Image (tube, rainbow, N blue to C red; front, side, top):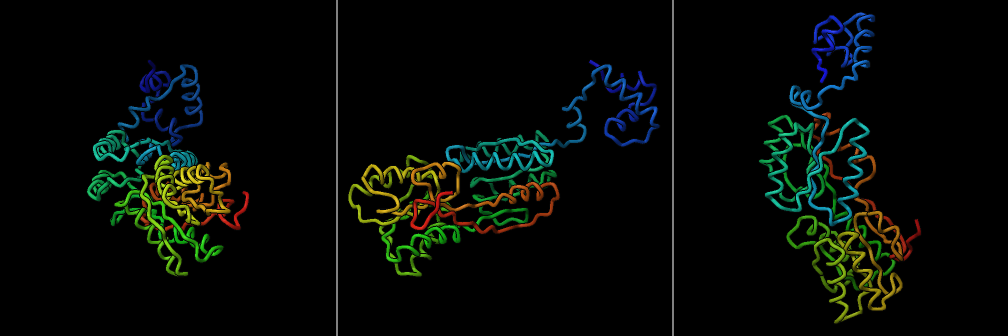
Length: 328
């Protein structure tokens, strides 16, 4: 296999000169540059990428730690972050923790072993000590969404209180005294608590009634099971506020199985603005967490190491599953 040293010997120059030419640093005559480039082409030389990474102790990989793929929000999040990373010349090293602390620890170690250029962290099971260790090893971090930690590093947090407030308020603007059910994520999760707080805030403003709080786990199945079970004992509800789109899809099916029309009998709103919502019947009103430019912002925070912290305001998307929604 041809090496850098072989190229240098064929060109009659030092390996340092060949390296500078290959990296576009110039510092050689035009004749020498052309000679080296011709030799490289003739011998079909490709640099050893692994050796280069080990030498520089840095790669073009950005680690992305997510909790799971069962929630469609995360699979779409991965795609959008990868596209933003690719635009700036980076590749994604995907780490699916499956909400397991042991897997989180494993991936934190492999991030260091792979000399990643930075790490985007979306996990309930990451501690500040983990971020400290990565930062001490020159791996900048940015936490997003579910990582509710007070730390000095870059962060993009979402105001879920405001997001669910907007979703609930949309239903109540059309039906001020609607009897509502809140379909929550796991009770102990901070994002679940924040969304419930926003729901309650909207109810208090108009004195509306909450019939129940149902606890799912952000999956289609839990949304269906919780709403189906509730509807077996009473059907006087007029609206369901869901903590994510996946549970909203399950809730929609449960309503249909109980011959309840959406939105005529029951208004329904999701959260996350996943693509599936646009293709449901009716199309799902929902909340968008991240505007498109925020994904480029995540990469900028890592590459520029600014350590800024942002609180992002979600946007309500009105579609056919609530009164006054539109077909988009």
